[in-house]
Length: 415
Ligand SMILES: Cc1cc2nc3c(=O)[nH]c(=O)nc-3n(C[C@H](O)[C@H](O)[C@H](O)COP(=O)(O)OP(=O)(O)OC[C@H]3O[C@@H](n4cnc5c(N)ncnc54)[C@H](O)[C@@H]3O)c2cc1C
Image 1: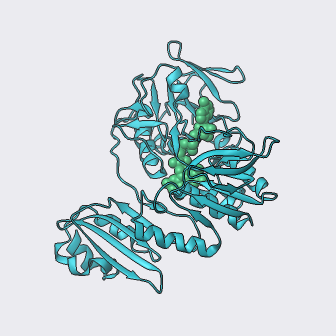
Image 2 (image 1 turned 60 degrees about the vertical axis):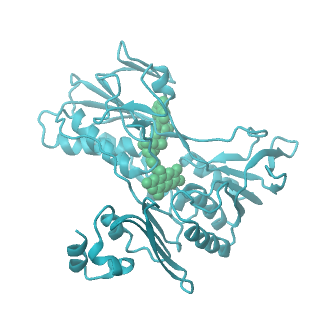
Image 3 (image 1 turned 90 degrees about the vertical axis):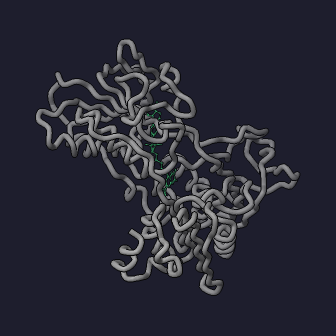
C-alpha cells in the first residue's frame, strides 16, 4: 500500500474472505488519499494465499480446480506493497506493547490490528472422536484430504444436513464414494426451508444416490481396532458403516487468540458498529466477530463489515455496520433452492407443480412479505428478496408469480 518504512503499521491476522475483502476496500479508499496511511502486513495460519472458501464445494465435487478458486495470489500482495506471511499462526498479542508473536517466534509491532480469524468447525465430543478417518470440511487442506480419502474410501458418513453437509455429501458422491448423510432434524436444511421444500430436496438427492437418514443423532464412532473409524453408532443403537466421516455440524467463532489477549468476548469478539473491539487499537471482521449479540456464517455480512471497517481504518469514519439478512443458495448443480426472510407471518401462499418438482411458499404478515422459499425454479428469488418487508396489498392475488410480471408494473405496485 505504501513503501514508506516509517508509515504506521497495520497488521491483519488471518487471510480469509473477510481479510481479503478488507484489503480490497482499504485499497479502494486509499486511491483517493495521499499519502496512504498504512504499511500493511497480513499474517495467515494457512499456507496458501487468498482463495474463495465458498467454492471449495465445487472443488470437492471435481467441478472446479483448486487453481480456479485462488482469488489473491502472492503476486497480488507483492505488487500492492502488502507483506504476506503464510503458514505462521499468531500465537500471542501483547496489547500493552502492541506486539504480535507468531508460532515461529517472529515479532511485529502494530499501531492498528485487525482480527480476521474466522471460525473453527464444531466437532462432536463423543467416544471414538479421535479415530482417524474423521474429519471436517473447512479449508483447502481439508478439501485435499477429502479428495485423497475419496480414492480409497468405500463408505462415507456425512453428519449434518445443513448447506455444508449436503455439499460435502454430494461432492464425495460425485467422486464415487457411497455416502450416507445423517441429520438430527426432521427435514434437510430445516433452518432455511419448510418441511415440504426439505422433502423435495431429499427426494432429489436420494434420486442421485445419496442415502439420507433423518432424526439421527450420533452416539459414538466405532474403530476397527487399528485406530481407524469403521462405523458411526447412532443413539437408537443402529450402526452405519463408514471408513470416512465428515462432521458438518456448525461453526464456532475462533476467539482463542482474542480471549488469551484479554479482549472482551462472548461467543465472538465483541465489536461496536465500527467493528472496533474494546481495545481502540484493535478491530475485528468476519466470522470471529460478535456484533449486537449476533455471530455470522455467510460471506455477505462479512463483506459489509469489511467495507465499514476499512472506512475507519482509513480514517474516514463515515460508515457503521448494520446487519442485513442475506439469502442462501445451495451449491449442488442441478438442484435449485432459494430461501430468504423468516418463515413466519399470519398466512402463507403456496404453489406446487409436482410433475416438474417446482414449489414456492411465501409468508405474509398482514400485507407484508416476510419470507420466501423457492424450490426447483428459483430465478425469482432475488426479486422476492427485494420485496421483503414491503406492502404487497395491490398485488396479493398475483404475488406467487409477481416476479414474472413486467418489471415496471410489479415494481410500481410493490415499491
Ligand atoms: C465449503 C464451504 C462452503 C461455503 N459456502 C458458502 C456459501 O455458499 N455462501 C456463503 O455465504 N458462505 C459460504 N461459506 C461460509 C464462508 O466461506 C465464510 O463465511 C467465510 O469464508 C468466512 O470468512 P472469514 O474471513 O471470517 O473466515 P475464514 O475464511 O475462515 O478465514 C479465517 C482465516 O484466519 C486464519 N487464522 C485463524 N487464526 C489465526 C491465527 N491465530 N493466526 C493467523 N491466522 C489465523 C484461518 O486459518 C483462516 O485462514 C462456506 C464455507 C465453507 C467451508
